[in-house]
Every structure is written in C-alpha cells, then in structure tokens.
Amino acid sequence: MNNQNMIECITEGLLNIVFPLDCKICEKPIRESKGYSICKDCLKTIELIERPYCMKCGKPLIPTDFFKQNREILCLDCKIKKYSFKFSRSTGIYDKVLKKSIHLFKYYREKKLAKPLGKLMVDYLLKNNEFENKLDLIIPVPLHKNDLKKRGFNQSVLLGKVVGDYFSVPVRENILVKKKLTPFQINLSKSEREKNILRAFSVEKSEEIKGKNILILDDVFTTGATVEECTKELTKAQAKNIFVLTLARTV
Ligand SMILES: [Zn+2]
Ligand SMILES: [Zn+2]
Image 1 (cartoon, protein in one colour):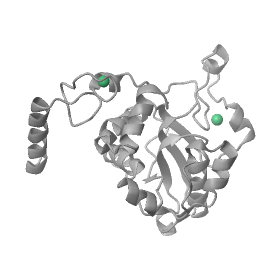
Image 2 (image 1 turned 60 degrees about the vertical axis):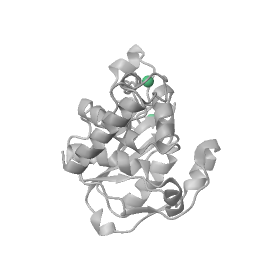
Image 3 (image 1 turned 180 degrees about the vertical axis):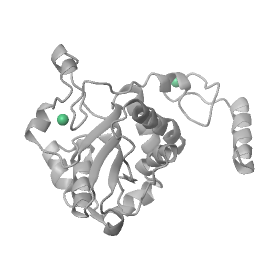
Image 4 (image 1 turned 135 degrees about the horizontal axis):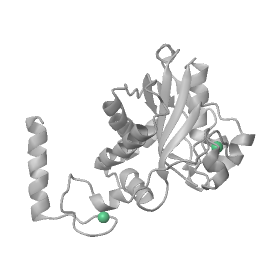
C-alpha cells in the first residue's frame, strides 16, 4: 500500500467511526466499510449463475433432468437466432441485490462498487474456466462521449479493470468507440433495441484487433443487441474469437 492509499484508508476508517454509513440496501450500519455503500452481508446474498444455462448466450435454464444431463443445450432464442460471438456468460441474475447494486453504481455514481462487483466477475471466471486463459484483450462496451461526460465514468471500463488486473489481461478502452448517440434503451422492445443500436459502434485501431481473442465486457445483458453489434464490428476488424461476459443478465 502506498502512502496515498494508506492516508485514504485511514481517513475513510475515521470517517466511518464518526459517521457510520448505513448500507443502502438493508439500511443497517456498515461495520467494516471499505468505502462501499453496501454491506458485506448484502453482497454475499448475490448468487452466481450456475449450470444449466444456454451454451451460446448463457441464459439460465430451468434445472430439469434433461438440461442437467445435456451440457450442449441451447435456449429457444439461440435455436432461431445466431449470435456472432463464440459464447456469452453472465455472473448473476439482474434482480434483487445485484440489480440495486448496479443502479447505485451507475445512476447514483457509487464508483467504488466497481471493486466488489468486479470481484464477482473474477470469482465467476475462476469457477467456470470456459475462457481457458485464451484471452488477449478485454474490451469494455464503450459509452458515447456525451454519455461519458454526463456520468463521468464508464461502468464497464471500471469492471473490466478489476477483471483485467486480476488475470493480467490488458483492458483497451479506445479501440471500439460508440459513435452514435442512442436513446435510453431501458423502455424499448427487443426489435426497437436492435434497430436503435444498429451501426452504433466502430473500430478505431483495427491493427490491434486482428487475430486476437477478445472478451467484450458489459454490465448487463438484456437482449444481447449491444454486444452483438460490438461483436460484428470486431469481427469485421478480423478478431479471432470473441467472447462476452456481463455482470448481470435479465431473465
Ligand atoms: Zn446490507
Ligand atoms: Zn441462448
């Protein structure tokens, strides 16, 4: 720990003794704070997605005997639609504590939550070694420059850095850029989302992509339209294999 970090740590510890923080989820005082606005007990309740899930898009499937025995299973969507990425995985269901945490992180700008949330992604990767240490680069889904200015940070970059630091995989922010300003996706239907995001991204430095195994990293997988568009652009730039990892996914 360097001096700056130590001073920050001591200041935070003192502040916490004088003004104990309440957990923004269970509202109980946080005893052992690392500056996170959520207590350890609440973070512990976040469940990681486990098999059975769709081998392509990572959608959790009902654990019937059939799904338990068949590991190469696809969900109904993936039987019709062909995603361009190799496969996508998500750490947890976008619900309860994970959903509230992501809201605090993104919309209430609780930047420090990147650490415990990114750690969940690390734990997921350690448990499910499907990427087989083959990753050359992590590319977080970019924000449009106007959105970045408004929020002040890109949540996917912060998560990507936690994952990249742990596995010693470089995180590259400026290779894939979002050039189209898209309206807020949250209230759009699946087809509207797809239309909205069409050709929203472009690759700036294709020479850095060519022949590489890339992990696209995002906070939430909803319809997959965003990561699919990113995949298409990276494929055009001749990336070798493209995988996707998101912190959460809607069901
Ligand atoms: Zn709590
Ligand atoms: Zn699927």
